[in-house]
Length: 319
Image (cartoon, rainbow, N blue to C red; front, top):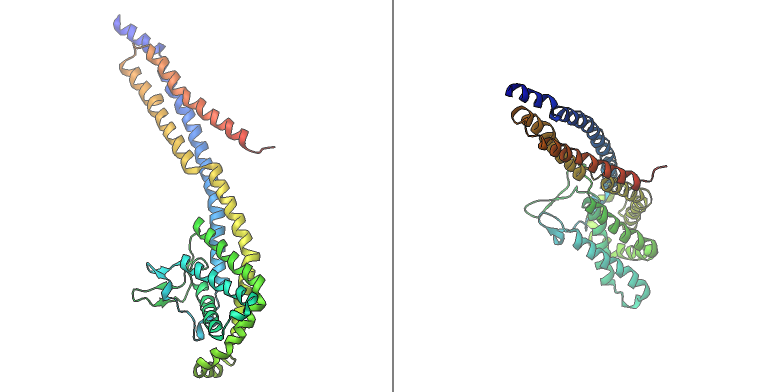
């Protein structure tokens, strides 16, 4: 008689049905999560790859190999820090240097030939250094002995938010100062050319015979800032656009956070809603009240997920 009652209790139990319901729902939600994950991940990867391409394109545009065959440039040891070029120090010194060209126009009486020589020499050094280093590229690597090494081929570098911020800052400094001080910079560089030719006369004669043309610093300066202008007008807007869309998508989908949250909920439902009801059904079928407790507890996460989904739809600009 007890066996019959026990069998009846098992037959009247909602636990097997509950487990089946949860297993079905879990399979549907899992499929939706997989679709959601790959859709979100693909969009994030798409914009990340576009930004990687732009970063590599910038390193190609800015690089002028002819500049590294002339003397009196690429003095960069003062900017070494932890086996790399210290971008903050480079940026600070560059700002101070470009401020000189503004001062030379507003207060020409304070500008001496020695000062022109010092500042223009520094400018040529920066024009040679910047295309090789962060954020334009990472082609210049610092060796243990402090020497610089320029490899034969440039490497692709992954996009990151700091790179975008540093690139935009440097671009703003270079482009704005060149826009306002272009003529003044070129005039002072032309004056410095005389001193430069005297200092490097022997090497320049050799260079002229081998290359077939003279070293004209003014042309190197113009060429460098033309590249800066092109990057500013054609590349920087795309960097800003793609990075904005990338951050928007990351914030919108919150892929890692939402995926981990849903996986935690699904795992909890699997344990409490599928495995636990079957164990109770097999070994403790007489405990009726626990069936209703499990029903309420295990169905609650679905309402929570539905609530979050409704909020997401409400916050999305959908037609």
